[in-house]
Image: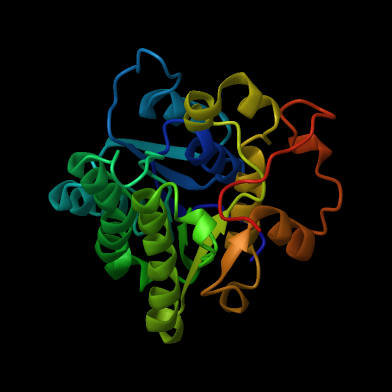
Length: 274
């Protein structure tokens, strides 16, 4: 496939960060982008809303539908899929990007936080796939992309934040299972994860200026996602992919300097990357 013109892409958590970057990358092809996020209002500490991203998508040459969606609510998720299909005639790609994070140990993780991460990370990935499935089955270029990591059973990835890790691994298990389940029906399902930390609001809150200076821009993940969507579809399914590896193998990228948040600064590897 050469581009995503007129393809419909549903992206959760799309009001900023990686979700926004994927939306804008695909918009340049003239894609239809459903920008879904929990709130439609301006955040007191964070830039961007579903409406500002919708305008950016339109300015980039795409078509936008901004939807306020709490992915913990099945009715809202079902409404999102229905609205997307009604507006644009179907759904071709689902990006499960919405996430919740709390890096705390077992004793320090309240049940409420555990439930939030389970609902936003694992359960929403399942619910969004389920809601979009009837439309994806009719698409000639159907993809589900989960923003989740490779699975490593090295205890160091679990010992300090068991709750968060098992929810992210749960997303990746959805990838493995659904890829096998829907392979014969032509739906490619993959996970994508950054090799280095990415300059997002979450990293800024967790690691501050130091984290931001040792990170890459969200555009590297967006470029990798685009490569997956436009590449050899069923060759890439059931994979837990790293952004850098995708761009090297399928896009021929060898120099990643353009993605550095601070040119020349040393980069920090992300969680779950050996």
